[in-house]
Length: 256
Image (cartoon, rainbow, N blue to C red; front, top):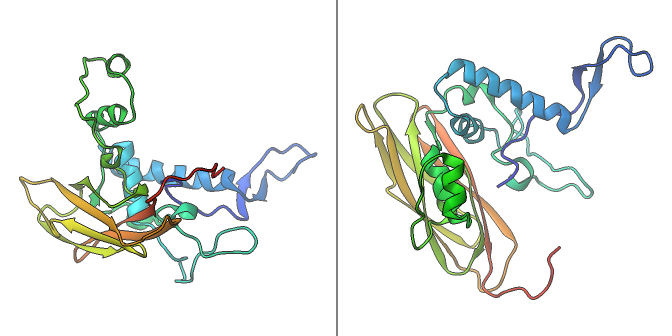
């Protein structure tokens, strides 16, 4: 799913050249992704300073899973364009960045070298290319791993025909002894079940995997519907967006 996150990008006071043809004061108000991107970059830098051992994937997860799905005042978020529509995860990813919450996410969806190898196998890279890239011999399993199992802090299923089961893994970066329970907001017409429904972390169990079964009740092809999956304890809500499109019949036209 893209984007991962949304950030302030309207009327941002930014440094600029002192060239008089542009602005001779050294600062100017600017808007756009060129302002939102450095906002996120600053958050990433702060998180890396706080958590030196976190991987890029862990930092992304912390940002995505703790984001606001309303604005900071609790109001609904609208997408740009005419007519304006309520924003969805295809507009803002996990939501609006919340740096304070991202510093203490509780759990993260992390990725290591083996996860990237399995991903490359799942999307069809040949073993020789993968081996050259990672610097060691690689053998892809047969059948290939599912691309849906790539441990991202989001779940997107673009062509659900009946049902599918996928896997995610969470790493505890919060309290050593903690218990999380699942809360599901399923997309319209979609059934979502998670096994197990409770995750227990302690000094010997820092990573726990769970399975997500997704099935459709739609009888025709649909567009995307959105929901969320949250793991919650008394302190944290670790939320990822869900997007599912039912495709029972093959389309014989160009959607572009």
